[in-house]
Structures are given as C-alpha cells and as structure tokens.
Length: 134
Image (spheres, rainbow, N blue to C red):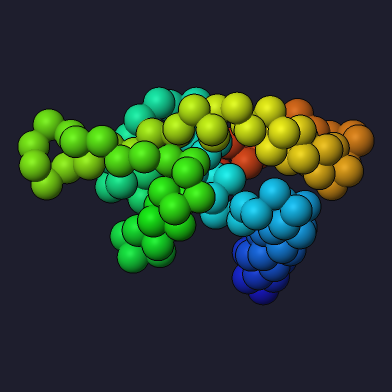
C-alpha cells in the first residue's frame, strides 16, 4: 500500500507544483507548459515538434496547441527541417530577450518551494527515478 500512496502523493505534488508555476508565470502571459518548451529550446537549441513531445512526455495534440500559441505570442518560430514534413521549433529573439525575466521568476519560485536540506539527495533520487522510466 505504501507504494500506491507514494506514487499518488508524487502525482499530487506534481499537480500542485504545476499550479504554483502557472500562478508565478501568470503576469508574464506564460503557462508552465510554455516555460517547459522555452527551457528545453534554450538548453538544446532547435528541435522538431516530435522531439519536444518525446522529451517533455507530452502527446502531439497538446504540444501542437502550445507551439501554435507560442508562435502567436512571438516566442517561437517554426523553420523547415530536413524534409518538407518536418518543422523545427526554435526560440525567437524576443524569447531570448525575455528569458532572463522568466528564469528569475522560476528560480525564485523554486527557492521558495524546495526544502533547505536534502536538496542533493532529492535531486539524485529524482534523476535516478527518471532514468528508470525511460
């Protein structure tokens, strides 16, 4: 029973963290799902929509909606890929310019939410668990 409760608690924690991130980013007009895309593109460069979906574990339809919203906002652009069907997604100059503002909000939120002690152990546990799920 403890396994079931642990997984349930982690799921609830994830949902609460998502809500807190959405709240913190609300004044910027971003949602947590958009921040995730921005963060990945900032760190990995341009990716295909499929690569983004796989990396973030998001199904194609919601990823399409998120990218379309971000194109309208001027934060990402789609560029032709290796063949006509493939489009790569990359950050715009506007997104690069606003990135420090967004990152500051996320860093402050993270500082307020993470327990002061055991950060390294929590990080290693999380990293190990994610590796097992891939």
